[in-house]
Length: 215
Image (tube, rainbow, N blue to C red):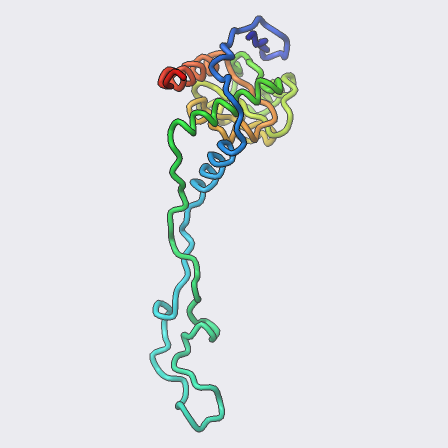
């Protein structure tokens, strides 16, 4: 298939070829759901921590004698029933990551890209050329591209100047093509790719398909 290329002024400047067979695959909501769930689980740090009655400080002395006071019996001020006491069944550090087969991740990534292509939400662009690392310069180019809110601008390599100029723009997120994943493809409204990034992405997908067994 043929993808149009936009320059920094928002005008068409040629086209590039993309082999649609690389992402041609049968869609499966179950696979996409599983991979996205695993991605979101991996984002959780799992560092939450509470203390049980054996870990909180104090509580060594019995508050009052067992009988004769008219009050309920109590053995420690660190009981979960008391203020500043321990927590019953509270969260503890844990690993939330879910193991997903590599083939399934690759399949889901191709499905997500296929969805972007089918919905005409992929746009190839020329690399952004700016004279100085100013946000207004990159924002002006995004405006000419008519980049909607929650878009992705994917480049082959993020330079310090480009990162500095683009990081404060809220509606478009800058990303390295090597870190592009299924979740990002499903979430973005429009994906902007430089020609170099598209070549790298094509090479990456080609490795997926070359390892598949013929049916």
